[in-house]
Amino acid sequence: MDDFRKMSQAELSTKLKELKELYDEVEEERHIVLGQENLHLHAAIAKNYEEEIKDIQDKIGQIEALLK
Image 1 (cartoon, one colour):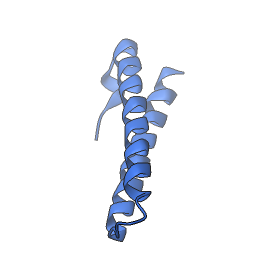
Image 2 (cartoon, one colour):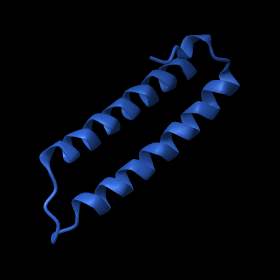
Image 3 (cartoon, one colour):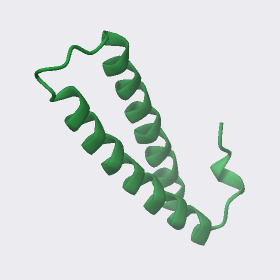
Image 4 (cartoon, one colour):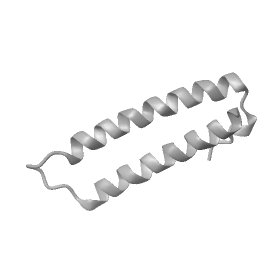
């Protein structure tokens, strides 16, 4: 787990920007992959996307709380 409390305000801002970009990329990828109607995907793939997105959202929340 990342310890964001040890980071400076500038580092936190940079990390927040990176995480928001990553979130957008993962959401877009998930939409493309799970939106393929002609391809059967294992349920674990959807669960993996959900877990990854939740992890990113949690980190974003932690950083935003520290920046307040």
